Length: 73
Image (cartoon, rainbow, N blue to C red; front, side):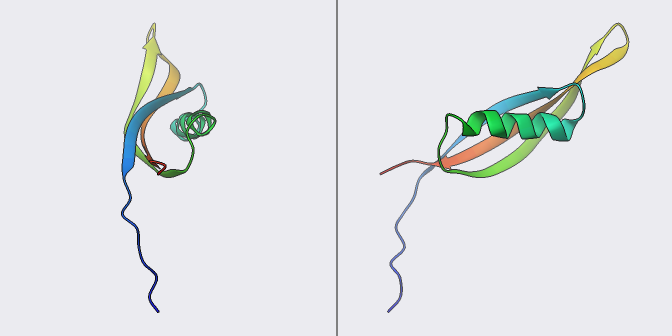
């Protein structure tokens, strides 16, 4: 007997992580921080990366991540 698949709805939110080390670390921080208050995260998609520049020097890496999570029924 085939399993019945239920319809699901997902919400997508953008979060931005910041790191002085790398874009990868900034993205990881964004996901880890969001996971502390959002349950059932499904996908983390990097949508934008940039650098913060002060006085001609890179001082931070910023990674914008689109996170999707399932609405609870």
